[in-house]
Structures are given as C-alpha cells and as structure tokens.
Length: 312
Image (tube, rainbow, N blue to C red; front, top):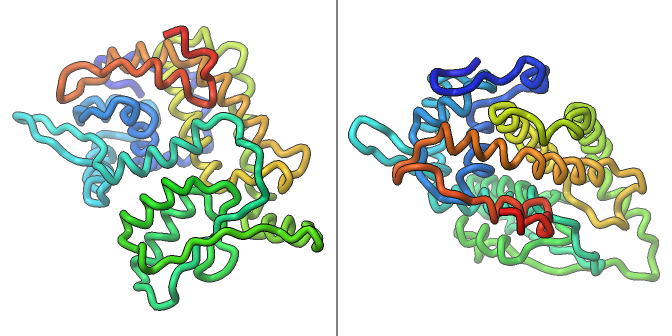
C-alpha cells in the first residue's frame, strides 16, 4: 500500500485495520488532530496522500476529502506555485483542540455531583439547533430530552467558545443541577445508561482492547512506518469510541467499566510508539514553511503522561 518515498507497513501490522471502515474525511480529521494541531502548519497535499495511503485511502479520496473539509471550515487551503497545502482553519483548530482535551486527557478530576445543563430555545432555526447538537455531542454532552443536553464535568470555556462560534449565546440557557440527597441516585444512573447507551459503548471499548492490547509489549520496537500506522489507527479508533462515551464520573459507572482499561492501554501504547512514529513523520511530511516542526514536548504530555515529558 505504500507510495513512492515511504516505507511499507508490514502485513502483520496492517492486519490491525481488518474489519474497520476508514473514511477519508474522518481519517484526515484524525491526522490533523493528532499530527498537525500540536504544531499548526500547512501540510503539502502530496504528504497527506502519503500518510493516508497505508489505510487504503487513495489520492482521489484524499483530494475529495480535503475539498469537503475546506468547504466545511475544518481546513484552510494555501497555494504555492503548483502545490496545494492544507492547515487547520481557526474553526477546525478550535474543534480539534476541544476534542483533544477529551482524547488526550489524564485521569478525570473528582466529581462534585453537579451537572451542566444546556437548554436550547424551541424557536431556534433547525440549522443552528443541529450544529449546536453536533458540537455539544462532540464535547461529550448527552441529549436527555428534546432541546436539553447534560454533562457532568463540562469545560465551561470550551462551551462558551462553542456557543460563540454558533452565534447562539442568546438562544441557549446554561444552568447547573445536582441530585438531592433525599432521593435515590439509581433513577439517574438508569437515565444515564439509557441516554448514553452505555452497553453499546462498553462493547466498543472491549473491541478496541481486543484489537490493540496484543501489541502492548512490542510497540516500542516497531519500525517507524509501523509505529505511525499503529499510532494513527489507535487514536482514530479511540476517538471514534470516545465520541460515544460521555466520560461519566466514577459514581455513574460500573466497577468493571472497560473505558478505564482502554485509556490506560492508549497511554502506554502512545508513549511507546511516539519516537519512531515522529521519525517517520519528519521523514515523510513536507510543510509550507519547510519541514515538520518538533512537537515532542507537547506530545509527551498527552494522556496525562507529564512524568515522561523530561525525555524530549
């Protein structure tokens, strides 16, 4: 599957993607979020084609995806001579940074029992309502009733940015709520289980663990092309499941919740794959301002790995 100028991914590692549907738009969002956001640069289209090739995404699909993502204000295009370069737009950077807070976060802080409620006015235009719902779902809110979304540990700064970007400050009420001690918490636990379909989310986490756990011991020894492939696929699948997981507080989750194990595995694998995958990226990627910038320090802080940051 390799393109000229890149090393092939080994067949054994390539089998990790078996059975997955890897769409061009979604894969490019993963690449820009994981690779580009820590060092905002515009990447040559040819480099994007090389990075996408091991995942079965050909140059035509990459060109179509970059066009669509630019039209949807995820990417900004720059023309230099005969070459096209793509970087994150202001809106796209905001989206991936918001998502990054969830994807690469460390352990959640202790919950204070409060919920953030977002209530959208009933007369808001359908297009605004749909955009808000999409962005809030991405942020980890759950729809508990028509026009009402809830989050147990909302990032209020990110919420404010979402409302401002949608120009919906006057269309949305934001409130706090908490359970009353005189009443049982069990109905709330059942409501959260139904709202967020936790059974389906648990199954998705278990599938991720079955796919990636066998690589844990050998990840640090993988060749650069293999390390890049596994790192990207890991973040892609982790992000896909995380979008469905509300990251509920411990009090709302069963004791054997597989999301905890999945986060620990991602922390371990990402750190083990980082050096080799970065070597591959620096060798393959061309940016509008030259070579890919070094982002080792910020990358090593991901998944709460602050203790490892001194190795850069």
